[in-house]
Amino acid sequence: MLSLVAFTFMTIASASAQSGLLHFGIKGGANLGKLDGKGYKDGFNLGYHLGGFAQVNLHKGFGVQGELVFSSATVKTTDDFSEIYQGQNLEANDGKKIKLNYLSVPILANIPLGTNRIKLQVGPQFSALVSNKNVFQGMDDAFHGGDVSGVGGLWIQLPIVNISARYIIGFTDVKGISDAVDDANWKNQSIQIGVGVTL
Image (tube, rainbow, N blue to C red; front, side, top):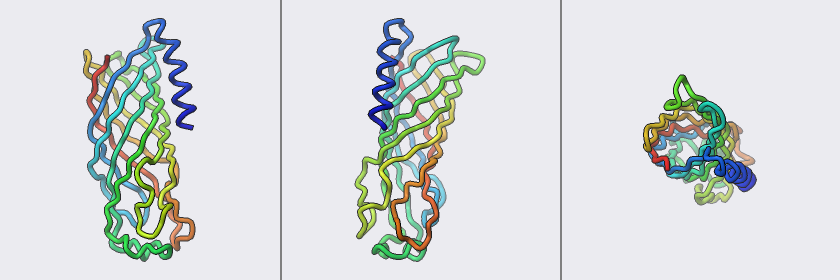
């Protein structure tokens, strides 16, 4: 799916580049992430994200923005994790820190808010887990490899420099445990605050 999305976007970008409507850039910043689900401590944990983007400006400031972003976040299980998810040798995972690294492709609509300098960004995000899936002792499939999310935020376009702030909420249950006592969903949430350079 990630390959298909990337190929589609690059096809559109190549065509748009001929008319001067295309802009590229790089970005990075803080990633505040958490895993919403039983057995995980509430609250956001600090991480980071790095990536690049391409903007296709279509009409009067409205456009489409595609990105390729690597993000890293840390979550922590509660001290009673093994009681909530019994079985599959989960006893050693109480109070354990887990680092989740994702490679994400958000496809966002850029909607100007009265000026082309400030835009509302909304759209889907498709992510693939690229960190070691064997994050739990005695279990190889703690997490599903893919995640589909919704993105909403603001993009401030200054000359050359851009500033972004967005909220990302996961729609996919990323839990890979199939026979746990508790079948509650695990869903990613994150806040990203970034600074970039538009080329």
